[in-house]
Length: 338
Picture 1: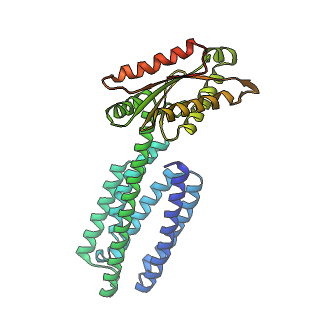
Picture 2: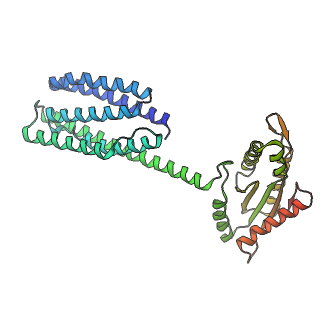
Picture 3: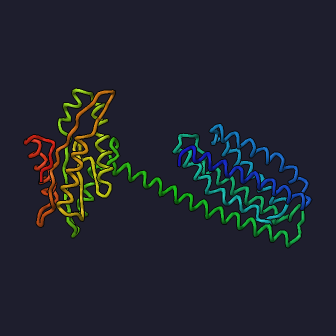
């Protein structure tokens, strides 16, 4: 989750809490809970100020202020209206959020909230307020029917929030796991799969009953491009070729094998389809107008195609494609060798 997404999410939560404060203020009027009615005014101001803190990217200050005030607010509601109302339940939902806030602050390079200390403080306030209420009773007595209704409402809200929060955390974990896999499996410059990932896929194809081909391709005269136009131009060519391959080979696996070499894995297709596809790719690259800093660069590729054969090892299979690539390199370049 990016900073802008966190801000948007926090603004929504802040708005929801502010609405709840006004709703509870109306409920306090019904209960004739004078102290809580007046206390709702600074509480509402806290969330109005919170809106500006969020907009100014002061999320660390906002988090601390809200945690302090929300804990105080719920404890006072518990003391004045009794623990049977269920306001203390909100304190329990704040504990896991503190760990989420600490995690996100660390990811964004912000000052971290001490989740253990915060959780301990919230739990302490929870125990003190409920213990006091259980021992001394509510300051403002409320009809039992209303009390039970509010307890049910607070329970439903707390449980619903915890379900939503758990879903959010799982989704976040899934996103981070995907990003980690991308970092581990993809080449940083081109965004194509890297050699390590491709080897895993080749092993799967090797064990499969489907037809399989590996295509080793190489950018012709790449060193000359680097020498003549500079390494930035070379990187531009690598990225451009990768994009062309990604678009042309959307249904197969393309990787950056190393340097200016690309390895393509094709499974489940016939020989004529594979050769026609790689020949079309070669022609597309040959006809492409590569322009870097207003300079036109002519680029071609040479490719060697090797079909998986019975009894052949994976290393020999890849070497077969590599040997055919160099046959093409030594016989004029800009061609497909099978």
